[in-house]
View (tube, rainbow, N blue to C red):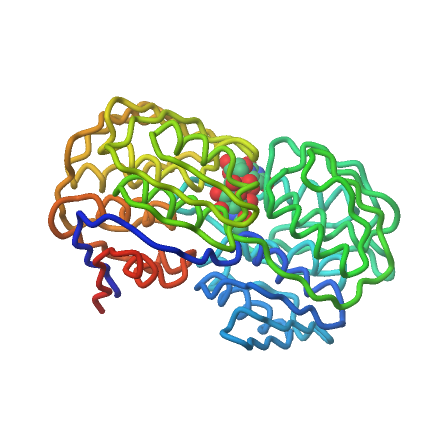
Length: 421
Ligand code: UD1
């Protein structure tokens, strides 16, 4: 299993290109199931998760071709050979649940493994199921699989759905299913994340009629069929956040290009609060930091609030900040797995319920730590960059799920990271 060995203490300096958004690419790839025609996607990040989604789709009979440097992908779901998402793939990537809505709408049936437990809490899918039932699906669980059907010869039918809580992939699944339903669907309490907006834009290019994405009320007027389209995936705001926090924590001067600053408000506010100098253009962000960061408290919330996917990275920054920070995690239970590992580097953190109190210390010192999930891994990389001496991070397959060649890109900015096989 690969490890990363990081020699800490270097400032980061230079320019870095942000990749396409993983969390936009995954639902948009699943949307290829909604049409017989080809969906051509640009700016698809080359990650373990997008490869898993490609494998899942190709197992159903979707023709998948990558070209260019792998960031362009052609998907054609002409005839589907299977409507099953097997446990082996779903357990490595929960976002596999995103095939459920499209399969049901297009094929009238689906068999998707239940995701089961995961490192950051129980993460149920009841809201996906409740919404699909409202659209007329008949659902039951059989041997760990969600078995979904709509009545033979009939389309799903539009419905008024109010989700009990804000769910990103839940909103996406229901939006995709509703594109081919008969009549109008309204999703209230919808997630407002930029990735939901990007999916709606792609669906509309395919002939769907989706309005209101980006607000908490999405209206979908069902159509009989969708057609092929070409779409460019938006920039990854979480990847941007991760690199920006790394600069604020180590000190340095880095410009991110192909970024989407308009999706980063909550993160940029916190970087300024930490003492960073932030400048913006339409598609770039420059962050300069020449001092020890000030402690920054935060509470995670659905978009446009502070993203849970950037919580662990800010927690790492706070480990060496001046002052005490209070970090509240309000989206997922059990999302402080990185804390035990950060403590091994000398961080002073107390957890009470869903809040971590972080007392900044002058210096962390390198040690061997273990990655537990995707964003926790990113926080350990940041901690390794600021720690004195060498830090070895084990189990970095988690990191490869969501970041493209992270160590090479950080090394190009002046970091010293080796991948050890
Ligand atoms: C998506 C993102 C993930 C991000 C999360 C929150 C993708 C592929 N993943 O995950 O990176 O951390 O949004 O921004 O886009 N919940 C239920 N029942 C449901 C659905 C969700 O109780 O049916 C709960 C979850 O357990 C969690 C909260 O709702 O506590 C939010 O989860 P959700 O927005 O659905 O997260 P994901 O879509 O899985």
